[in-house]
Image (cartoon, rainbow, N blue to C red; front, side, top):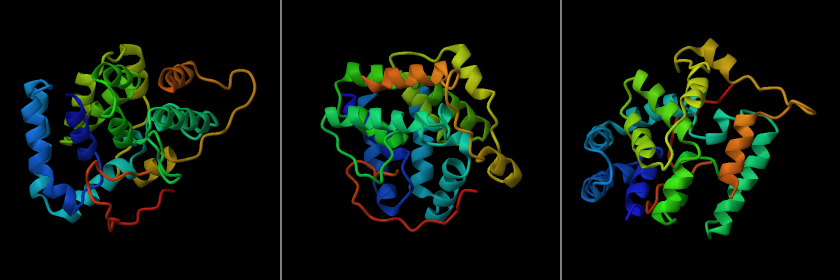
Length: 243
């Protein structure tokens, strides 16, 4: 079954907590036991699992925040990479939330439906063929995230390599290249981060749409959430406000 493997990948992308650290042996057993992924990808996941299991929790939390909260090009929100702050993003969120609800997954108002761990958790509830097909919709985004993490030497790269390996579709070179040409500021470069987080203007009328964005919304259309099976424990985390 692909279900448990996807749940494990979803958990690995959640904010590090003591409960998550304690679950590492179980997640490792699922990934190795099901052997759905290529050996090289499983080895990469093993490195991440070792880091999360044995690392200092506060260091792990700080690294997570620097990577995924402060660095826009590594955002774990799918629509951030195609919509930014444009008006299209709101409708895309509604469409994806409706898709979840049509399949029996309800989320709270505080959760953003395009959060990658939540999206993967949803896929874990679907039949294998449907899950792989849906995973193929944002595959170019997942591949771009994997490449950006590779450049940073981050073990989190393995999670995105795993998702790309499971996806029914593979990233098209032009779509992937376009994403990789976007600015990719280092989390320590505050000036570059300020520029990256500047609000994009909302455009109306002819030409306001973007073909890539519209296609992604159409394909997916047919917050933070705790890792699957983990107790709901509000984490204590550094407060790093976005500009």
